[in-house]
Image (cartoon, rainbow, N blue to C red; front, top):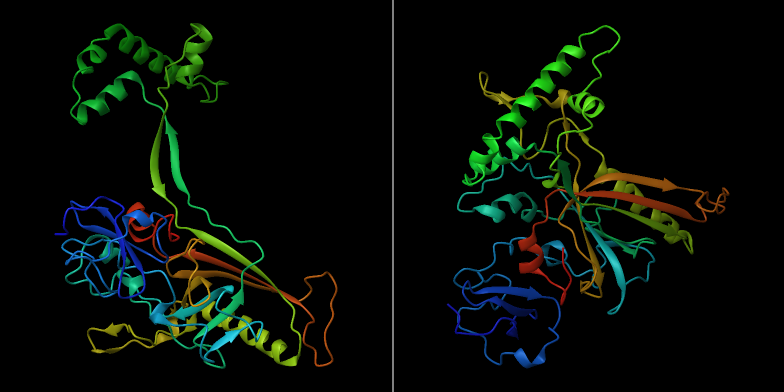
Length: 380
């Protein structure tokens, strides 16, 4: 375990990233894209079991969220090489902000071997196995576009207000081990009997022709005694929502080469978002009785996923929130973004608007936000 250190102690690792100690007891370190603000807590020599590289196990306990890493998949560097489709053609410098898109096959989450893994790493396994592939007519390994016109992120959770009668509320508390109020609540004989009688009378009234089954217990007690059951409303957490994000790009080609490049870009997005005919692929159905593959005419192959990274130069942007691999839910191309149809001599639109919709394939958890990235270096 790391030597006794205060929370917030940090050092620069051999991989160029900065590591901040979150909790001494669990030897939990956070990996940041840039130097933390508190220079007084810098360590000249990191502890012997602290993480020093991206392949480190993070010390004696490490972070359960380290399986998902921020940045281009496969360690790609969009500032070098000519394997990317980019607009504009002279896009990307050391201080440029842009979006880098990569595409990969969909990994079925329940067929991925998770032997030896557990917890959050197992849940993320099909996403951490994301491997960039070349798709489209020119087999590009990625697409580079300027920052979208409207960029933002939203984290949503489903909370619902539910009502409990006094007896019901006490019964639930009793199931959780709190028996203190059960006796008094259950002993409210008169209140319980009155409530039951009201319910019975209501049921009888709803059978009378003309009432139409619309009278509730509260309608009965409210109209005859001026009281209704105390709703004891509580807001309860139901579930998180998978994050969604939309992007819109106004694209104006400056010459014929850029017109052709834009055509290739939106065709690549369309191709990645579309299913493939047949069941051929990495996972194939077999007829167990005949021990042969089932032909794929009755099936379609799930579309590719997209991992996009908001970049600043050669590294992930330190302030814009990032996403796990996403499904492409929408690709819309508007050839008349200015309300008028206009083309160059060869038919290429003088401007177009590309709108993309994405849905994250995995939930984001609090531990991933706090353990992997924080306010000093961006977050999911």
